[in-house]
Image (cartoon, rainbow, N blue to C red):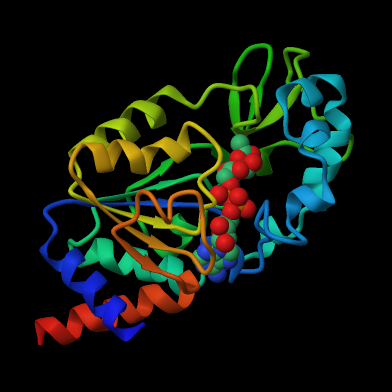
Length: 247
Ligand code: OAD
């Protein structure tokens, strides 16, 4: 493992432009369940009933009640994986993070350039007038919450069946095409179009480093370097190795 960590450190140190794509796995060590691991969110809740825009239209109160119960999202703190990526950015070794997560933990750790590919859950959007408000500015006493215009508020995270926010989609494609290294961290890489970002980067000539304790769809055919370890362990070790090379 140490050899892989040192190779990753060397690759990051010499890359011209490094981008990270993160998924639920990077927040697992903060206590937020992933979606598809055993005991994950999709074992507890059927995505057809809670995560599609059709399900939301069918019964917005039911989806809101599930969200309100999801206390991990409100109380979680960043872990060494999040802090490590923020540190890499400060060192000038990470250009930006494209995250599928809606938990705000990259920003809480100090990362400045975070592209929220699946939106975020800190805001709500009115489905009639499209007004957006911070979640804490609306009352959740009666669910679903309604806008002054009479429309229903929806959490601003992307539901299945909704488009990716266009600025996030286009910028992510640009970053993938122009980087020469992509770190793919804590994602099963099965949900498109996010899962396509590493392929776009690879086809444009980038190297791919995957950090994930488990095998994924990308492991065999796309990754140049595979670190089968938890993000909160591997990322600090890579940073220590970068500093050791530099000293
Ligand atoms: P998944 O739950 O599909 O995958 C989580 C990945 O994290 C798995 O490959 C795990 O092996 C890995 N993992 C677990 N613990 C880890 C750790 N400590 N360090 C590193 N990796 C770890 O989550 P995503 O790939 O993020 O979309 O799921 C993608 C999308 O599917 C989500 O954004 C969400 C979901 O449906 C929407 O809801 C639109």
